[in-house]
Length: 327
Image (cartoon, rainbow, N blue to C red; front, top):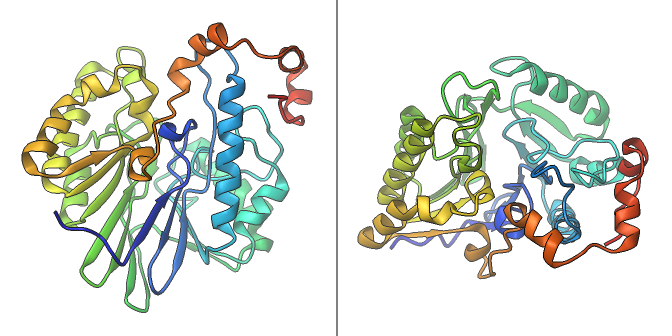
């Protein structure tokens, strides 16, 4: 199995670490890059996140801030808040504030999704607000769609915009990033959901990466907002990806469903027969999986929140957003 030795690849936040994110730190002998520096908690089961989820997002925020202080470049695949940090206070879903955003983006070269082309309305608005509020802190902002940036022996190759899952999805587009150092290549395939689309899979494989970090298909939305056949296509392409890439880190959307591993069994079997490996972000870091979102109802039953937390949940939303939840 081909190992990547000159590219340091460290997932910082992910569903397997208890939150919604694909934030990753990448370092080569030439550069230090922070990819998709966002982290969020999701709305599920008509319940606010459990205190354990708030503890997880606080840990991940600390981790992201630590590595942001090392990074020279920030790459943003798209403008969803689990992939970029907004410059406003919200302790309910994003655990964010202006100080946190400044610490991430200050004096950094920002390589990001175009805010005007191949972008849906909500992301266009978020991207515009992001630039408007943060641009004075950037070292430089450059549109990354389809572009390659060279730093010494390191190349940062951004894909052209690919769909955020299935074709013509209302969720819009995202960028994939391949980091190349000499003969080594790793790909961060943000929110391609499997990938669901054959053309997205082919774009990944054409770069011949030794490691791919990919979001699995959104199993928890099957038969709700995503058709079953679309999910199956994503799982089929995931299996092809595992067959062709020595190391696949599988995380994000797929791990929001309790039966995620059962549905991904073909990919795991293919990894075994191909002598490749498929790991969650936590497993890649040699940590236990800390899957919390799909367990939210169980957590509320098994680990009753404190009175102070319950009081916090009953505050008006604008007030609650400004107060760190007591955990």
